[in-house]
Image (cartoon, rainbow, N blue to C red; front, top):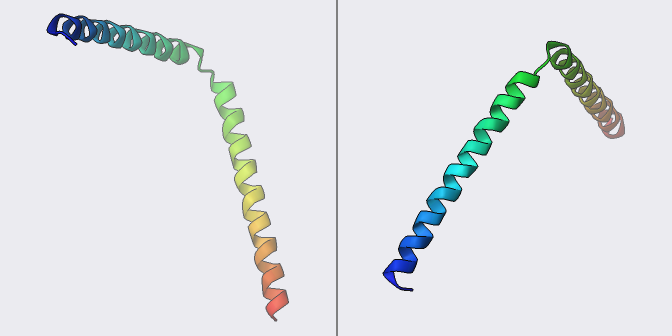
Length: 70
């Protein structure tokens, strides 16, 4: 590649990077505006349910292993 082509590619990459950064900023601002406290509470509740189920299943599995080796 010639130095001119290298420079053109470098400039193109810089412009692409700037556009990507602008799109990321737009997405962040949209996501920030769309946050809803009600949805956040529902998600927290669902997370607690999932972790509670996982803990219960682990307890049942541990009890079964204990009974097998007993």
